Image 1 (cartoon, one colour):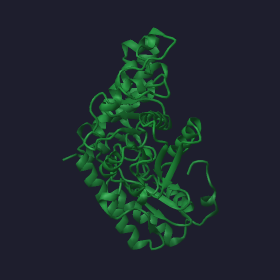
Image 2 (tube, one colour; image 1 turned 120 degrees about the horizontal axis):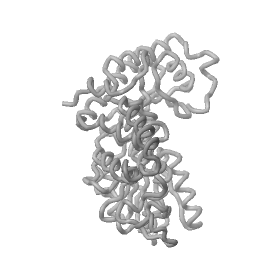
Image 3 (cartoon, helix red, strand yellow; image 1 turned 90 degrees about the vertical axis):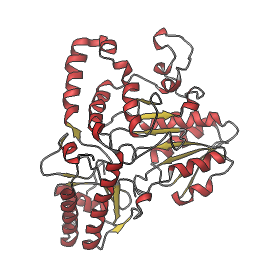
Image 4 (cartoon, one colour; image 1 turned 60 degrees about the vertical axis):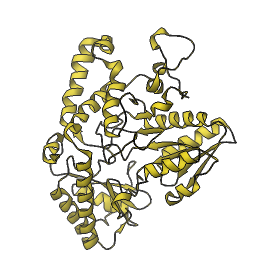
Amino acid sequence: MTDFAHTRTMFDLPEGVIYLDGNSLGPLPRAAKDRVARAIADEWGQMLITGWNKAGWMDLPARVGDRVGRLVGAQPGTVVMGDTLSIKVYQALASALELRPERRVILSDTGNFPSDLYMAEGLCRTLGADYALKTVVPEAVEDAIDDHVAVLMITEVDYRTGRKHDMARLIAKAHAAGALVVWDLAHSAGAIPVDLTGANTDFAVGCSYKYLNSGPGGPAFIYVAPRLADKVRPALSGWLGHEAPFAFDLDYRPGAGIERMRVGTPPVLQLAALDAALDVWDGVDMADLRARSLELQDMFIERVEAACPDLTLATPRDHKSRGSQVSFRHAQGYAIMQALIAEGVIGDFRAPDILRFGFTPLYLSREDVAQAADILCDIMTSGRWDRPEFHTRAKVT
């Protein structure tokens, strides 16, 4: 059994704070501070540019990619780190569309993260007027898959409600219709068990600064199935995706397999932070993590619904249809969340009316969850949320 009391000690958590926002930004792993300090002082400081060879900086995207791959059911050599999630979405979509040249439709759903949709819209504009992004409500995705669809682009767990798609089922339906699938795992990697290999996934992308705790702006990852890795042509043909970057050829030749999905110079310091953060996972069983996450979520839902009738659950009750977060709706959700944060319980707000709470057993205890629910309901009962300072919108919600 995973020792979650031990994993909690591996994080630098602020005193007096209950952190329920690891689904937006994970907290600081203690080991990351020392690892980044060494990368700055010993590697950058002493090795200077020789660190690319001596410290293995050039190999970090693949080596760390394999460590992330283990958490999402990917085979070694099929995941690489670098760039941002939006860049990786664009790469995967463009490559998938090129593999289906006779089709022009990208299918997604209205619960997808907006940035993914923006990237798809931009790609369609670049490719021409006969390309289109089609969106349907999440419940209608399966029925909308037909022989016009080139690529199904889906975020497995809805960032607002926590609703979870059935990955294997949608992949099977898409493949039967001749379509490829791109999965966004931003709210899956490190949150729920994922089996990219077993589900016969084509492409997957994700970020590392949420449940994987790499720090703000941490690098994204991309997965390409081995059967496709040497066939895809990267639309963003950056120099580090070249077969021989330091040959400095004037013409692009794609690297072997997943290496061709590299674009620019890797963010060495943030990869160092992620590498250290992944040490936390060495003793974690994903089945244990999932069981504890659901237990904590159920406890929170039960306590909140019993004492806060004005809050409406937006997250599915069915465990199979739920990720690792709980969301409640309220017309004054922003002000309520600001009041909650002011009292040391950090969640976040998503427009138009979602109070969002992430459940990460690596550092959250049952006592944390019970206390957070009690504070939330006390704020609701007393009306303390309805103060002018809590209604003032900040840039980041």
